[in-house]
Amino acid sequence: MVSSQQRAGIRAEGVSKAFDGHLVLHAVNLAVEPGSTTCVIGPSGSGKSTFLRCLNRLEEPTSGRIFIGSEEITKADTNIDVVRSRVGMVFQNFNLFPHMTVLRNITLALTRVRKMSQDEATVVAEAQLDEVGLRAFKDRRPSQLSGGQQQRVAIARALAMQPDVMLFDEATSALDPELVKGILEIMKRLAASGMTMVVVTHELRFAREAANQVAFLDKGRLVECGPPEELFHAPSSPRLKEFLSQML
Ligand code: ADP
Ligand code: MG
Image (cartoon, rainbow, N blue to C red; front, side, top):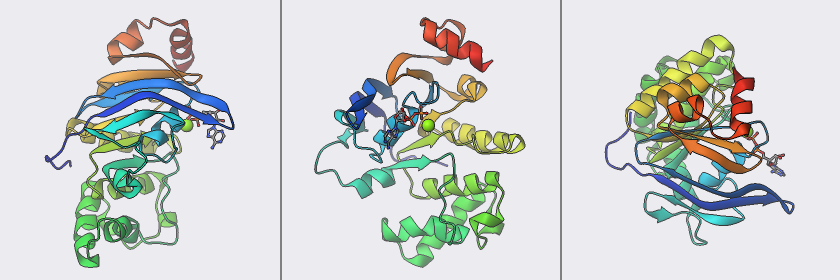
């Protein structure tokens, strides 16, 4: 699923974010090794989405630096379109364009950002839809698909851009329980294929099975970060202990 050419890591150095003068991220440091998966867990409102959105500059960090591979993407002269095409993102609510077909949802950025011809883009999009088992649905609108199918389209759309890294923000939280497994399996397959991923999730089992490291955010601070077996079986902070006890 991943082109073998580049495996970029991610590094966040002292990333802070304030909204209206109120800090919601406090100097977060996180390193994601190339080809590895980091799961971000934490209570609602702890800054997980804000942090993820900073990683592709959907939010502008108030301070700090972010690197994708060796390139700092927080420089003033950074081309945002290039960042967005290198850093794929999948959202809780799919964020598909409702008035476009499945195929057009995928080809749009390929033609606009990647400057492919419509024919080239269609070939890439159909191949990506094959990967998620949805080629037969290419002419449908998102509203004619189940939530699980819509999320698979959103994943295919992100992967069609051949991103260096992928971000998932609670990608299964809006799905009916029976549809969750299929999406987690696609994400596991992607992680196993060597994609660099940051995954905000409440699925602790997924974190345990697929993550190389787990980061616990609380009140905008990265409280603990380490291999899943360490965090889940021997959490050192009282806050993480409490959080985990509430999750189980
Ligand atoms: P999480 O994803 O962990 O639930 P968020 O990153 O969504 O947390 O939010 C962290 C904090 O930042 C919350 O207090 C939230 O209300 C605040 N916040 C998020 N986005 C905005 C925004 N655009 N404007 C003002 N406050 C925001
Ligand atoms: Mg969130």
